[in-house]
Length: 266
Image (cartoon, rainbow, N blue to C red; front, side, top):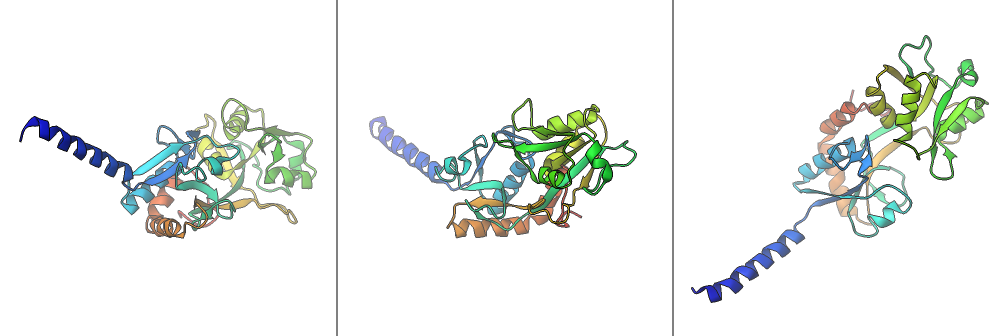
């Protein structure tokens, strides 16, 4: 066959192959490119690792679209068809259809390991005298559940709030201040506490923070993957994959030091 007739055939084949590759199914996940311990553009983060496990279990390539967390995240990701799955969403998050939870964590007290009597309870009478760091949420500086607990106990005189804005994550800055003696204790969301405490130059101790009686805000949260509302087929596939890779997921969470209140990973 002459090259004059061969060229169109080759071109047609290449176009068809490209179209087939573009249409090939994959597990499309959106994640923040700089949000350790959850995700990072270099592939690290425990949510990235769990997404890879699930994609492998489904026999699909993993395709990650990087999108910084912020206002309108669900609209800009699932809503804009940039991806089909979000990892690490609260199980009761109404903007998505959530899978069954694959872990449950809580806020924790973090103190230096060499502290004579580490904090473990909001009933500790020393709480009002100690310098305690707490996380604040968003641009409006709203308190996290531990902040509400401290207010209920009247232990706010020496509390120091850490906003999301700054040089590094608030949890990382809090634990650095604790290691340097600028704080006596910190109240931190569990997965962040476990990750940054393991990287502290000074040994730190974690203790799950039990909310005081009568507090109306939850302290522990179940975490799931989320898909578009109505996409029950994908949700069910993810549920089955998460169940089959349960032991591997527990191992990943243990590698990242995630405190668990669901009995998992033990």
